Length: 265
Ligand SMILES: Nc1ncnc2c1ncn2[C@@H]1O[C@H](COP(=O)(O)OP(=O)(O)OP(=O)(O)O)[C@@H](O)[C@H]1O
Image (cartoon, rainbow, N blue to C red):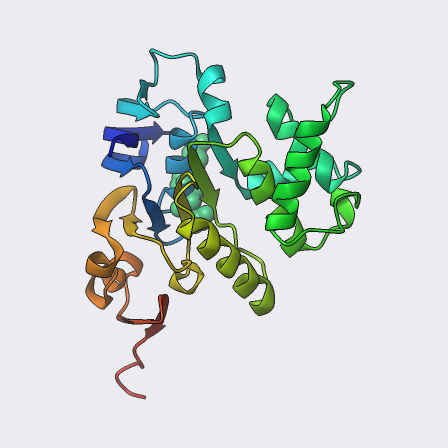
């Protein structure tokens, strides 16, 4: 299996601070990674590097076999699907769900006179349907619920048939039903052998879909652990990552974590 993403000694320095600190990490074809870490750990910064939107201060990054700095990123970007809160905020509210998905095919966020062919529209509808959005294709993005927007953005990320899918906190802000629905759908995607390599940033182990194979934990920009999920996602590593005693459990492919009671309880 070849690497779809490879970071070697990558650091991102801003205002004298190392937001990402000497990170080395490789994602191979077929792998599904969960990226865990507390607020401010550098997860989003890492995703910006992986999606080619941020060039690291030091270190080397290869995406889909191409080394950043030696490749035209505009050719690389359509091969990477990305969904994040920052991108979701940039979507025009009046545009329909279908148009929101379609614009990804043209590397744009807004529809602007370009003519979409019917195959593209059919693909957008197929992806929306797959994410449980059938019947909502013509609704304007601004009127969609948070969960519907999240599912629209994941459909959008899949529009170009990417080889790498990056999801930055896809379940943030969803209620329990919305979260469970999304986790199920992402689990189905994770189980699809034709689906791209996946990387999902999350704060909560409960959001890790079944079928995810690897975990990367970061804290203060540094990698604490990276490897097979059943080996590395344990109480010791997670407690270290979040800085308090946590108990991790796995049941039927899903994960849960809870804090230990305080000593005087
Ligand atoms: N341009 C910048 N200049 C200085 N500091 C920055 C800049 N961008 C981000 N940071 C800081 O870098 C750190 C890492 O930010 P990042 O968004 O990558 O963390 P995160 O792990 O995604 O956090 P969260 O879980 O809260 O979303 C934060 O402390 C943030 O304030």
